[in-house]
Image (cartoon, rainbow, N blue to C red; front, side, top):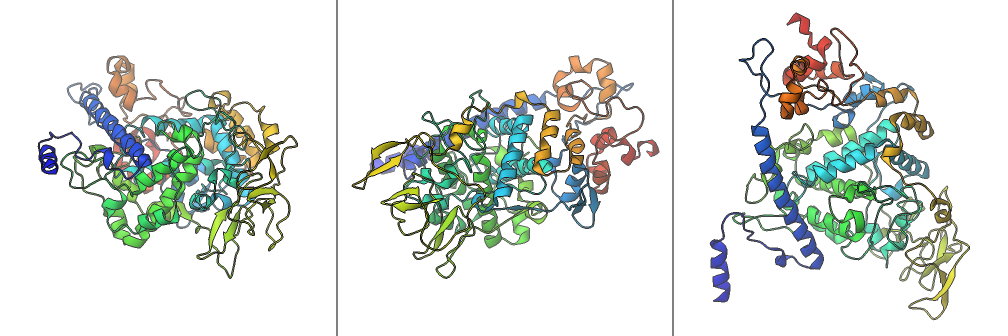
Length: 610
């Protein structure tokens, strides 16, 4: 009787009251994630109403000398290398020469190739160090913080979370930072982090991933104080990234990945994760958005709330793996046409309209459905396979991984010095060490020889003696919250990385260490995304529209209102303001983006022949 009354009450709920509440979540972590999903969805719906009211109030000024006319509000177009979907589009920004089909020859004579995304531990030492260097340069230039702020502001108030748009939005976001990295060093790519390999360990916090060679370690306050991203100043002003490892959440498991890949319908993959009353789909707690959020919880600190998650570079390699799993699902369950056309039904009670297929993928010039394009993996990047091994070939191809040959054989992350290796005695589990009584100690593994890394590490000279749990002997270690590596002693005095301390010119000077030709610098620095969207903007600005019609002019006439500057501002006569005008003309943009092209690509739209 009580159950029947409960169901009857649900039928009487008004639209907007949740039919499904988070008490249905399978465990405490999922309850936490579920509440975050609904909170973000509520913010997104509120933000959408405000933005719609603002957009409805915008009107274009009259046509000069014909004020009774008012041109159509232009379609936004913010061209940049990061928005490109193929190599010929990126090529001019690199100062290169387009050649052949999807080809580009760089100024140094080398080809610009598709990115090959490898697992983080499968990169060579040189590749990894160059990737670290590129991110550091992006941080110093302020570009890293600009992109992190995009995730904080737009990502929390758009179709980026709590619904079907999650995977497509983050695919585009990771693609953009990868292009930014490759503008500095075209020979590297964004790695992905397969946290399944860390989850096999008795304590994943001891993984080599959380060492100065990779993502760095934290001090007693949880601040990242060594490694390549030590003292990365956050958007909130903290002088280092914050992590709270393993307090809640969990890393990916092989079973979780297999369950995701086995989902039969697109609504199980691009799931409705915050449905409201009347939605015919229940929350999918095993969907990728929920599973990936559990990893965010496990890292904790900045990674826990979406508003601060992109402060930590581990965000990008985690989402690189999410994108990889999604692409594997697409390849296994959809043909080429379905991969670009199949989107979950646009149902307002299941997701807010910003998740609809035709909705703008804010803040970019795309729709959500554009995120399904095959162009991402046809032209821009591809994935190297996950690390594997077998009993016949017990090698994972990396000095930072080892093969657990127990059936079925699989690759596992190595443990750093002083870490827990219980259960893996007899395996090459310890990086530059050996597993003794369940703990990694300095020594040489007596088993099969392994390839040593180019960079070696040693334990600090100052240690303390503590009683080792699960053993009857003493071990030498340091507290978990402090570093076990000598690198810590060298990095604790480093200044915080802050975009406000470095100018673009200093970025250009420092880029010489990445192996990139200096001829790229001018192309990078000239990419100032400051344009008008309408050829009438200059005339409107002269008549005072920047002051009297601020909402429109600040949105569509930024250059004329002097809200930014363009390198061609002082040029006179008919000229192109953007380096990629020839490419866009070949893509029929003179028709597709007529107002923008008429203003910024005057030579190639042949204004004087119209």
